[in-house]
Image 1: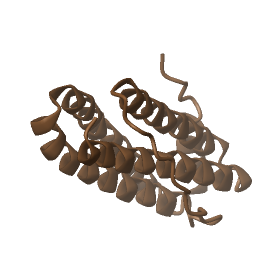
Image 2: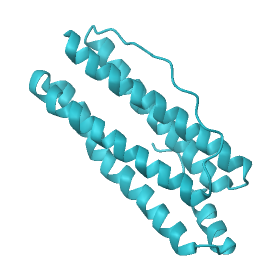
Image 3: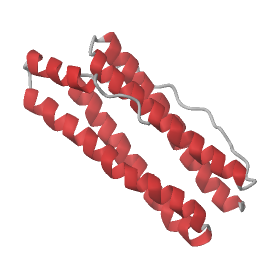
Image 4: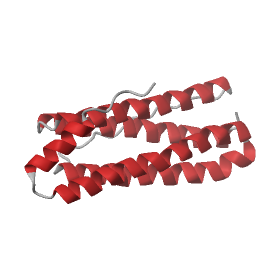
Length: 163
């Protein structure tokens, strides 16, 4: 694996490290606030991001590249209201989408196999952003109605691990 390609993949690995840690921090926060369903949803999201991280690591090592795991910044312990928390989820997912788009432009030219992996993640990002937006829309609709917010929390608690 050439040095530039390796650098791009290591940047994506770092983004996934941050993502899994961020969603775990958000999960712990909402769990502490007794929004256990939302906490469950975010914990499973963290697991999903960890799966992406492992896929990227495996690809780099299979191509005889060097994986550079860098330190992850400490995450906040307060994310505001559930609505504010999920607005941060959407912002983060948009950041991730942009990073993968930029990586795809380069990787697909020099390593079509790597491009396929990134393209798969880009395809998945459509759903990631849509899910976050749906949750935001529903929490916005719920407004200050605690019963409605708790119903959304209950619904999000029904999410199960994929596969």
